[in-house]
View 1 (cartoon, rainbow, N blue to C red):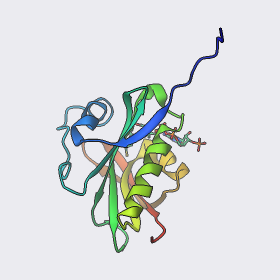
View 2 (cartoon, rainbow, N blue to C red; view 1 turned 180 degrees about the horizontal axis):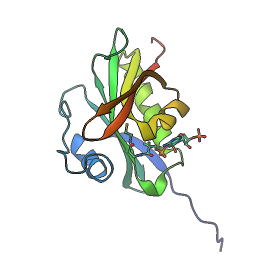
View 3 (cartoon, rainbow, N blue to C red; view 1 turned 180 degrees about the vertical axis):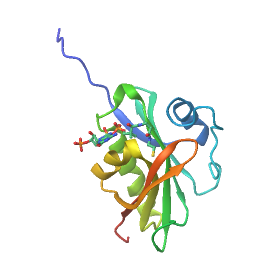
View 4 (tube, protein in one colour; view 1 turned 135 degrees about the vertical axis):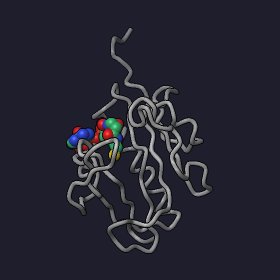
Length: 153
Ligand SMILES: CC(C)(COP(=O)(O)OP(=O)(O)OC[C@H]1O[C@@H](n2cnc3c(N)ncnc32)[C@H](O)[C@@H]1OP(=O)(O)O)[C@@H](O)C(=O)NCCC(=O)NCCS
């Protein structure tokens, strides 16, 4: 019998807002309401990464004007988190890549986010660029505005 450890399979799928709440609660929204404005809007796109059935990553995309740049069809990325047990294995990248390809299909030409200072390096690795200095978003702390321009479909 092989002693090789099977790494498991990551899949990305669209889910209901509520499916993202446990990871949001654990990683992002301590002591704050789990629901964010627009979670139930018809165009809100909630994605989850599953590893052997368990949700190990979540993110939301939603059409919203970019505070810093003009765009025809800007979308905001929000509520991004992966389980600490799977960090630095590509789950975050896979989630955002799946989201970007879906929002391009819906006509998006730019995605922006308020990136926590500790996550700026992550967003930069996956193709976003900072467009602001650091600013404070209470109660979380310092953030930078980051964007990625998308090919027009
Ligand atoms: C930020 C976060 C989503 C990254 O998720 P992840 O699953 O570890 O990301 P990935 O493994 O796909 O990382 C993609 C690349 O970014 C790098 N990276 C990941 N986190 C990083 C960080 N905090 N700083 C710098 N680089 C980072 C990875 O090493 C990888 O680099 P590579 O291209 O050399 O392979 C995760 O750390 C997290 O949930 N943090 C807590 C919640 C949070 O801050 N969310 C963002 C709110 S704005």
